[in-house]
Length: 428
Image 1 (cartoon, rainbow, N blue to C red):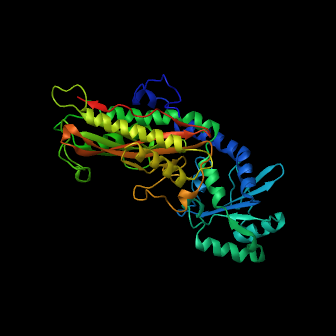
Image 2: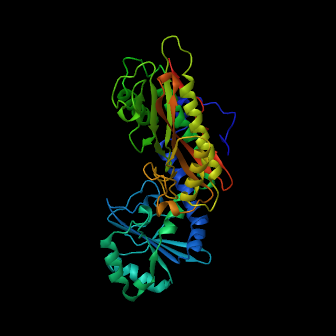
Image 3: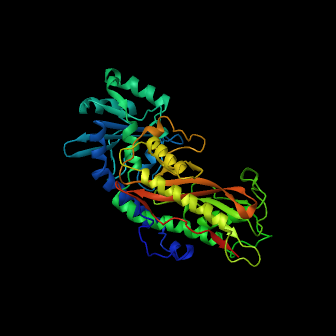
């Protein structure tokens, strides 16, 4: 396990990092360069791996398949009317076509003339001409990411194909493999996005934003949301902040209350940029008058959460399923006296992304289906978990220390892309 891609890096702050956020036109150029390379160099291997000769991605405007956003170039990330993408595996690569009125430049050649034939008539004709043995469609009982073909479009497809509909197979695994794997270029860019997320939190959990006895948790979470907007990134869920004080149970913590000295603060923050999502949870302590550090009991609780991250990282092996990783990590944590809970999810094109689910907060014995999927190299995760511990300074009140840090599974080790929180933020 590695704590950071850049061990000697010091976070320069949100505004400094924010200067690396590109203007929209430059983002489009970078994103589309990444996409064309992935289509040319990565997709053929996934089609071979899953044994699919032709892949159909069919979506309608405002009812998009969750995969199509990752296949269309900027600025056309959504289906218009009915958009049909057709991928045909050939010896020299993958032939990419759009059974669509316009096509998408160098990405997908337009192959339908609506003045000559109906859309599904065109699709059926092309399929018969190419004669693939296995035609992958996005239907799945397990993964939402592999289940984007609607019932209406499926019915139209089957009617158009006739006897060729016997060749239709689920493209579930192809969808997941395409969505979950990060390219070399994406992995080079990802650490800065994680650093920026940390920097936003660091600034939010400071006296620049928080005045004890005045500022509310609502104030802080709205500051975070505005900060992301000002920096030019898109939040994928509303940033949240909560507080717990001496005498407050975690379940009864105030959602919109005033932040007091002596409070433990917790946040959950994430955004989208260049087609990638971040998702981070960290914690802060609001110093009482005369204090220079947090109570040792709270620091011990954070150390427990760090130990749980270690057990989690040690349990990760390529080929192990999410459920196997969960069991090994929890068993080791319990044996060593922790009170653990793990609910890690893949991270990438989506925030709660494609790949193996490693626990859910309410399913610590494993997640049937999604947890049975194996770990692959060059995939990314929000390592999300918590450890509970009694705090002597709070009359043995139990505290839940929750952490979430973005990480890359290289195939051999887990790398936390922007390090991990080992010290509480201190608000003076």
